[in-house]
View 1: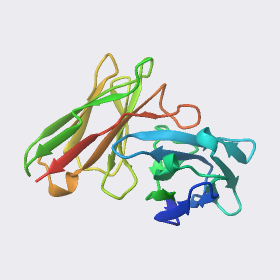
View 2: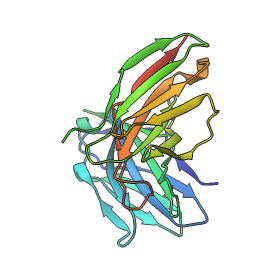
View 3: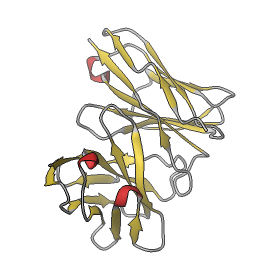
View 4: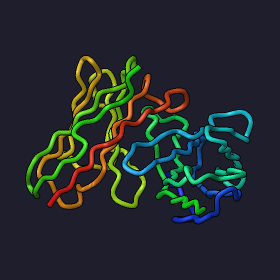
Length: 115
Length: 115
């Protein structure tokens, strides 16, 4: 069975500092990888996705992630965070041959950006 | 272009009651997926509807059921509510089922509280 592990439940960081949110997945088959952001009392917004090709993926709001197949990781990074980046971040995978494209989510990481 | 909308925003029910949640998909999308997000957890896939038929189901009991209408809007019905059903219910629509090319667009969710 596939699973997604987000290694940090909370990440506090000061404004303008770099941040990395870690994500590991377990799967014996090909997967597609996603990062979503959830602001308070809102739904999920797609930040970026890896489907194939270049392992470095750039997304919205200055975020990027790198797919590492040997490490089964898909860590999210931003070189300089803003107060407005404070939110819940979810890593998710989709089984490569899924007929539904159902997303399997990690537990989430709360990014707390401090002034 | 109208995004995914859900109603109601909040709902309070008591144990044993039944509830219906509604979702309007984004224009042009024929696929709707439902997820349950318990407090402090990542969303979990409930089921998916594609062209008015159930296309896949997660690990949820039969008292969770759904419908999709000809205009591709959808309903989630939960019978015999239990306290553990308290959660944020998210609806996502996409151009079709499958994972690689069909990005899921999420609505803001319905917060269900079961007392």
